[in-house]
Amino acid sequence: MINLNWKGKNARKNNSLRKHERIPFQVIETHQITKKNLSNFIIEDNWQNLLICGDNKDIITSLLKEFASKINLIYIDPPFATGGDFNYKIQIGEKGQYLDKIAYKDKWKEGLESYLNFLHERLISMKELLTNNGSIYIHLDWHVSHYIKIIMDEIFGIENFRNEIIWAYPAASAQTKRFFVRSYDTILFYSKSGDYVFNNDPSIYMEYSDRVKNALKQDEKGTFYYRGGSHDGKKLSRKVYITQNGIFPRDFWNDIPYIRANTLEYQGFSTQKPERLLKRIILASTNKNDLVADFFCGSGTTLAVAEKLGRHWIGCDLSKHAIHMTRKRILDVENSNDILNWNKKYNKKPNSFKILSLDDAEKKALIPREFLSKEIKNRELLQNRKNPDFIVSIKKNQKDVIIELKDYISPNSELIRDNVKKKITTFSDWIDYWSIDFNFQGNIFNNTWISYRTPKNRTLNLITSSYRYKKPGIYVVMVKLIDILGIETMQRHEIKIK
Ligand SMILES: C[S@@+](CC[C@H](N)C(=O)[O-])C[C@H]1O[C@@H](n2cnc3c(N)ncnc32)[C@H](O)[C@@H]1O
Image (cartoon, rainbow, N blue to C red; front, side, top):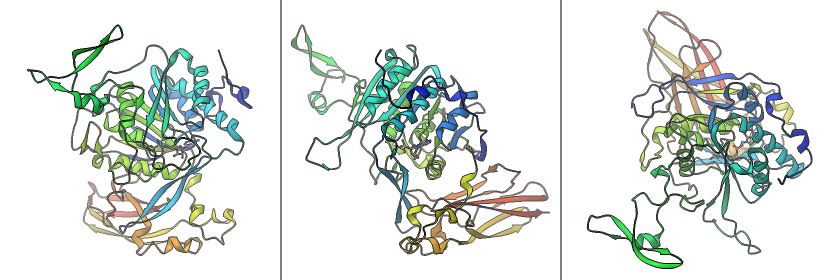
């Protein structure tokens, strides 16, 4: 057995995160979705999908108690140790203005060792979360995939290695003429044991090559065939019949395009992966109602595909912006591509999900560094700044209530760069999302009404639909607003219904 050694590894060897202190989850909000279009994919039990904000090391530690041996598939697309920063686009209002914001940094000051330590301890515990017939796919590229393969052989056993999938995409342009253009990612696929789920599902098949398609003929019954085959090294010219679905996938995937800005699935997240990549993985390695997890969910690709394929899901990310993007992507899943019929819209509401967090430190109004005016040096000072404020008017007509958003006031306006402020022309340009819990019960926010902008639909409703209370009483109405900088503000109102 060949092992890879590096500084810090032995401190972590066999060191399951189980031994770390567990932090309890806090439920931040719930989205109980009322289904209009019932489908076969409705999950019949009481499970609610989970979107968790925080460091996945703490999240995995906290999940181990309830979810050890419960997750059927893990797909992760972690930072690749590229040394770069990755952006996403913040869109403003309706007029096509946008800002670039750093989504996450992939810099490892203490070198490759610190990256390997980071992933190693997480991979050990991800194995504990998998069911005995479960699988894991790790999406990487040339920077570290060779190191992680050796580490995975050690953790999962070389006998459980299944594939090194090459996802080849056309490179945008050659950045250098000093070596060959790098134009593929590597996805390592391991199962937890030899007895693992792997479905021969026609929906995962690859298209026939143009050479085969051009050579196709139809027999008298209309079935397609080409002439070919070989025996004892000699080429034959026998009829090889084909099915319409294409060929069973090889480990070289060149049939899935990279995301382009003009597509429906584009979220403006620079490392977003295509939904059709996840479709193949999820259909091959899970069955309906199985549990899929992505601990580096980014813009939420894995979760959106799991949702559309009727799988349960758990997703998490360190970045509040990634969680917000995923929240909107799941809420708006009905307007995304139908994963089994790509040219149609999915047209179904998502299943209910909860948003959890491990701490509430992030509730402070923290302006992203790249939007701060250049003169602002002392970031510490800013942490204690007040949250933005907003004004709503509440109109009652007996038991019916309507709320209108009237204004948004940024107390931090003087701290924000002029080039950001210039792009904002009306108060509603500040707003990305607002939602109401008309009957707030305590600490969990249950969305009853919501309006938000998506990459393709920039309209925001500033007036809620009418909400009817069933009984007289005094109710707490909680309003949640998330601005384009990702700052979340809550406002509490009491109303008396006679
Ligand atoms: C390559 S992106 C994932 C992109 C995703 N597959 C998609 O399709 O949008 C990696 C993500 O991992 C997140 N991340 C990095 N370190 C993390 C950690 N320790 N815990 C949780 N998330 C982390 C980053 O914030 C980033 O969103």
